[in-house]
Length: 301
Image (tube, rainbow, N blue to C red):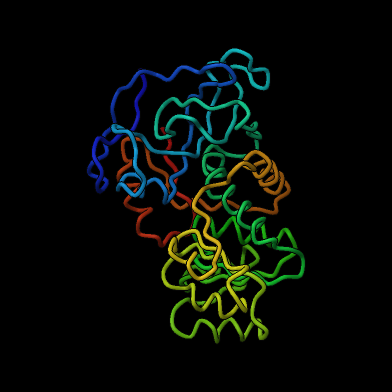
């Protein structure tokens, strides 16, 4: 048996329960992990609230790091005892999770469990959307909610590509953004003027990780909607803006390898805002819902 976080009805975090369930068994091409860390992402509380239909009871968590403790038929990439991270097939808010071996990468010994557990969702998503926006050397990228989970990855990945990054955030997060290589600006009224003071000709592209009404000013600053992409304003597609609804897509393993290489080179930091034990998953999701975080939230089963 294995402990896991589940919900049997949609609602606030009060619907979550830590229950004893049969430990998942890996099939051909799969491995089972003893979960060491599971990243908390906004998609998790949205699923809990019923924004995406699930077969109930259901679990949460799509970002996992752990130790291989069982290997399915045909797996040659990993062995029992290997430390890995990636995307699970079963919910990561649990003591055990199953994953396709092809969806995992080895965890370097220099990377902590806390960091390893948050790389796939936010890091993979940031890598994917920068690819969709075709961010290149010498370009100027505006990122809304740049101090958040996806934002902190996107800032550093864009800087690594040679782009100049302007990031919106609360003033108390500005110093952190400067340390990551971004030029911080305060969001809210007058944003266009503050951005133009830095980039008089506007920006080449915009990544909206906020979803709090920034689409019109983003289109204005980018000179059109073609290179504006949002992770949160799902109705913005009507304006010609790119809407990214998923996570790292099919490039998750490639993204993870690039991200891990940058971490080991000292060119990418992964701020951790808070850690919680599995039993406090509800508190972790409540904190995630506030949307004002300087770093990632991690469950440590």
